[in-house]
Length: 228
Image (cartoon, rainbow, N blue to C red):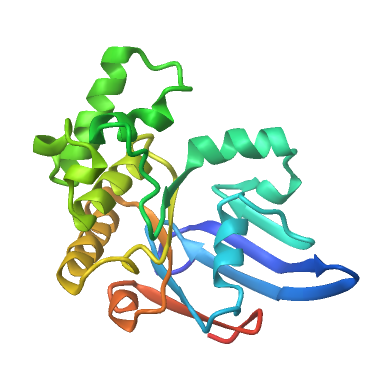
């Protein structure tokens, strides 16, 4: 337990490598640390240090070679691919650098996407979507298409999509990397508010020290090893 908060993520002796032909390339080696519930964590390090790989392992997108990851008490390294996909959809919200919005869908429809495979009724889905868009202050843009929104507004739609199913953790890979400084500050303040007011746990990969300054804790990776 850290700062009186139980860990939501527990990582123990995690290692990951990739194969390139006959060559084995280590990406992460012996990573161990915990993330308290309600933490805003920034992962920093040079390109190729393993930040995004670690983020993908925590989010259940990729699988480790060895070691264990427990999220909310569930050992996700022990899940089958099918169980992992189900766990991921119920427990992880994703925020990407380039938003990953569907251009042919409105803001409302983009936010609704994660709910379409749930047993929620149409009315319940609408309530969830309107609540999420209200949190990011975009209720008045719900019928707009991505091309009609600024970069900052598109990222807020993406954040609404990430939180609409009330996931246990949010993972953000360079969420301000494609934004101007003012829009980036707006998005970072919104993420800090999600932690402060809604108790979300956010794990963010960033190269930007200004973005990392918004986090409660900064962890540094260097050549696949946690240095801080």
